Image (cartoon, rainbow, N blue to C red):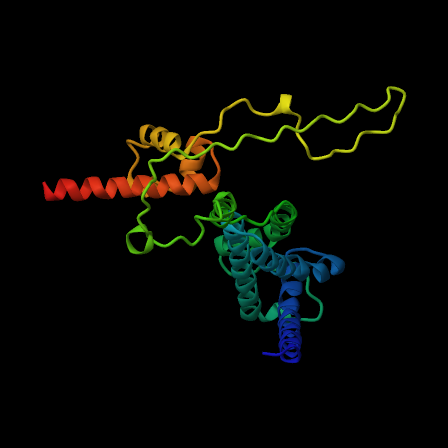
Length: 279
């Protein structure tokens, strides 16, 4: 449906609702005069009843959860009350006279008292329920999808190597670990720059180089050392938990080395499983 059709549909709805309100307004005004309201109060009375119905409908479209159910209950209650009063107006011809004064709404005493109580309580209920609905709408905050937020956070925290990784049983190659020691590359010593003059107040710009004294004193571990440490840490881990990200966090190493260790551990477990089946 295009924009023009939607606009015409909304305008048609407004016209129908306006005509329906005019019909109901006539009955509710006469009911208000019958219970003792003056001309001004009787004219405003339909807005109290049918107006709150419109407010409850808008609130039901905005609110969610228990607040939305409360708005729907208010809408249903005032709709039923307006229907009853319109029905009573149709049953009493004396309410249709031009000059309407105080009169009975039913022949029986109990029925008349109940209808008068209903008609007189609707304005008070409009004050209470209308204020409550407006407060709920003003304090309403849209609900946040926690599952979607958690999924997004997990995708951000995962390493790029684990995103979209196929099952190991199908495509993961078996990596043979070379037993020869990997040469350790010594870090290049960087000569510290000369300090600026003491009297200079200009802030020093960051060069991106870390002084040797501030570097980590932890020695560089070889692949063999990392594999031995990983065997000890992941001995009780299931195969599904052997991911590059989990091994990287456990060993505190780079993602590339963590992937090498991961494949080596999985290869060892596959060999152990095959040997156990063959035995």
